[in-house]
Length: 324
Image (cartoon, rainbow, N blue to C red):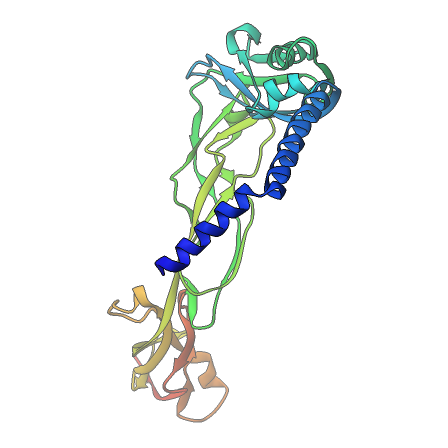
């Protein structure tokens, strides 16, 4: 291994001493010098460049809430010598700052085109020519009011995968949001709504960050909320249900044999530990007037929406009528 390394060193020494190596090195040095001179000359020419200029409002009191948010950036196209643009814009992110107190009055923050252009010239230099900007002027409404807390209602179109169920209505994790307005717009607002949440075939509890539905002239804080979509697996639950009787006239007793029937359904796992099955069943006295048999059909009655695939273990029971 050492002999191989020594051989490589000897070859390198012989190459460095050759005239071909010296000529190539001199040529490379001249190419680098020429490139530097060309770059300097090119920078002295006027060029146009587009920049994303960071915009900051300074000295904004904590009590101020903007109804419409100030922009974070201004897109501006300027023309100037390349050396000036390199120094003021390319080598660092350009930014402009505006003092809130200098441009605000009675609930309105205003910037004219001259205000914006003057700030841009301060950033890029007075020699710059501003070709175009994404912001010609700015008018922001604000309030110093305390705001009003209102609940958030979730608009959703959600379904669960097979074997699962949406255990309850989707709801906002935040208990409410604060709303602000310059006038009295918030007086008649008692709730705010989210944009529609659409999720399908869910097999686990899901959280979604969703924006609030905008209201003209009103600012909501926060403008987004986290929505919880509770999903649970379905489990089979079995039990006995007491048969109720309906439409029985006064003076008559309707006796059933038996007076209970087996029932089963699928419920969310959180409901499985409940002692009673949330299913009602009944027989109708009026059906005794329609046939001469001694059996009545058992019908499923009311049950909560989370109970799925309700089944009765008996479709009929024997009965006897007795006068009181």
